[in-house]
Image 1 (cartoon, rainbow, N blue to C red):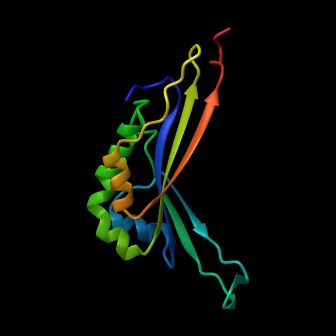
Image 2: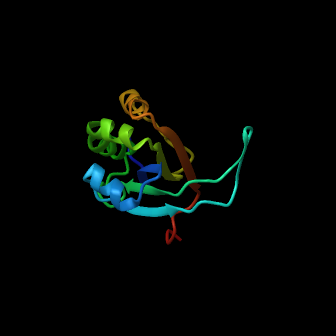
Length: 146
């Protein structure tokens, strides 16, 4: 896959109810790049009636500070190399897992290479039971290029 001069990152985020960020970190043995608490709201409306929500945590690991490449494949492979071996621990956490890709593309002339995700990376994301969210930002002009 060809690189491009924009910002690229991939983030794996866990949404865990009944857990704290520290407990998730201890369970996985990895340091997150961001964490937060999920605060319960007074009522959660469901088809079965009103239920109280539960406390929990979000736990994220972003590749931008670890991988300098503009190739998304390298970012995804880094995430998968860390988290596929932890698949059973992730399952035990009963977390909702989301992989987010941020891809900033800077136009160069009239052509723009598209975002490409290798099939084995898609398979790895599926093996984790994760959803995939892609944010593409198109920048038509490089700042300071005038």
